[in-house]
Image 1 (cartoon, rainbow, N blue to C red):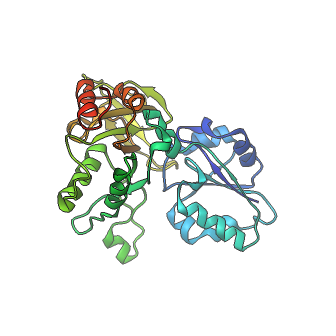
Image 2: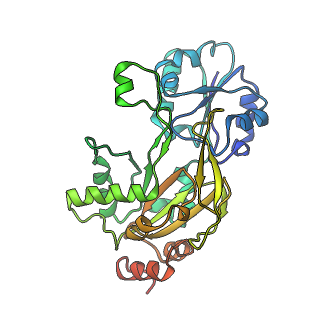
Image 3: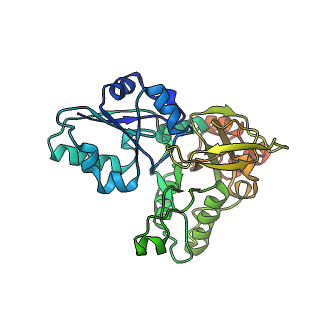
Amino acid sequence: MLYVIGLGLCDEKDITVRGLEAVKSSSRVYLEAYTSILMVHKERLEAFYGKELIVADRDMVETQSDDILRDAHTENVALLVVGDPFGATTHIDILLRARALDIPTQVIHNASILNAVGACGLQLYNFGQTVSLVFFTDSWKPDSFYDRIKENAQLGLHTLVLLDIKVKEQSEENLARGRKIYEPPRYMSIPQAVSQLLEIEAIRQEGVLSPHSTLAIALSRVGGVDVPTSTSSPASTSTSISASPSSTSTSTSTSTSAPTTGQRITAGPLSALAAAPPAAFGAPLHSLVLVGKRLHDLEAEYARAYALDAEEWERVAREVYGVGG
């Protein structure tokens, strides 16, 4: 049996009871380590699960899946996935390969950003298509996401924007030369995401996004302990951020009062988010919600608690979105 098991969003304790039982019954347990990351290191997972974990990077999952599927006809093999197994097409691909080999499969679900985004106060049924925003380069600035945002906006729906992460990525030169040398991990920040969104708006000029009249909500480390939004003199804290769920990590000094696993939600017009200090958003991973015009009074009221400037949030909600009277 091949188990594909969702781990949830935060730490080792987010796994379901059914998922933990499947892990303990497996002879080999792989940890998929590139579509997303947990907030804790691999060793904590191993201690809690009572199993050694084999880190499965992009190359293994996409080109060496036979190693993962080996002997799965006769023994249990588990692939652990941050969030929910169906949050990335990669996991569907390995399930299809298992089916082609007549290997029994079972998916064990868990929370993902696709449902936990409701923590910001916006109703899930008011969301449209989810989009991904990748790091731009000087020569590559894909803008297909803009069309999806536009379609959502035309229906008044909110858009969840998933921000890019780069874990165990090769430079173009090293990739061309076949050198297994990897770049340091990178996580897209909220200000960078806003900058890229507005850059494409400036190119397309279709009026989908406006710095001062488009409301947005930034989310960090959803699923962790909730941290109040504050931009006033946060304490400086050294935060260890896992580059992947392996024993390899990178230490990043982050000026924030939030605990390492702290969930942080920050709201405001795009211009306000672009100008806010990094401490306002907490540690990676980050996501961004673009608020649709069908914003309900209760949604606006709930999200107001996370606003950088509550009066500005109320004004834009009232004047542009027509809520709050």
